[in-house]
Length: 257
Image 1: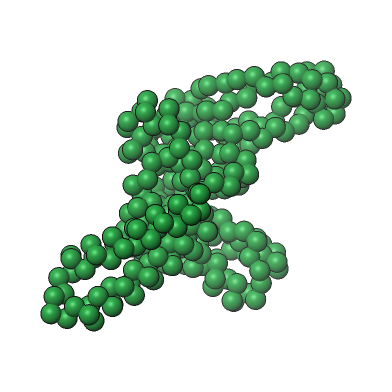
Image 2: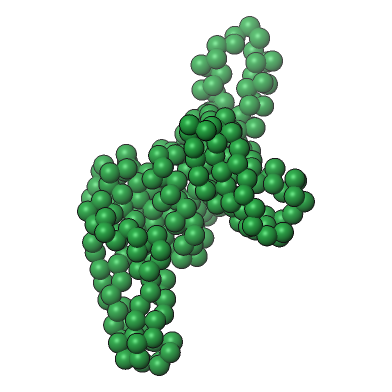
C-alpha cells in the first residue's frame, strides 16, 4: 500500500502539519483496509495540535487484483477518459483489467460494489437509466441521483435506490432488463470496451450508448431493406459497426479537442 505526506492546515486551529494519505490501495494485498475505504474513514484525519478531526478528499486508486478491476477516485474530474501512459507501459496485463474513473465518493463506493458483485457496470448503468425513467413517470418527480443497491439472481431481481424531489425511493426490476442491457453492451460497446486508460461509465455514457444502439438497429433495418438480394448478416453487421465506430471516434475527437 503506497502512501505519501501532504502539508495541510487544520480547519479548527489553523496550524499546518504533515499528514499521511494513501493514493493507491491494493485491497487484495491489504484487505484489512477495505472497511476504512467503504466507510470513507481513510479521508478522516486528526490534528496533532488540537485533536480535532477533519476530512481531506484526495485521489485514490482502488486495486482489486483478484477480481481484476481498478477504480480511480479523482474528486470532481470532468474527463470521460484518462490515460496513465507510464502505468500502461509498465503493466501490459492492464489490457485485461477493467479500469474506471469516478468523480465523487458515493459513485466510488457504488462502482466497487458493482464490480465486486461480478456485474457489468456498463449494463448496470443502462439498466439504472431504464429504471430511473420508470420511477420518474410513476412518481412524477425529478431524479437527483440513482445508485445500484442489490442483485438477487435466485429471485430474478435487481434493485436501485433513488434520491428524488419527493424523497428517497427504492425500485427493483427483473433481471431480464439487466440481461437486455448486457445485449446492448455486447452489440454496441465494443469500441469502449477495447479502449485503454480509465473510463467514466455513468448516466451520460448510458444515454449515449442507448442512442448508438438505436442508430445501429435503424441502420441494420435500412441495410436489410436496401440489400434484399444480399442479406448476409455478418457482412451487414460489420458494415454497421464500422460506420458507428467511425462516428463515435469523430464525436470523441470533437469532445476531447
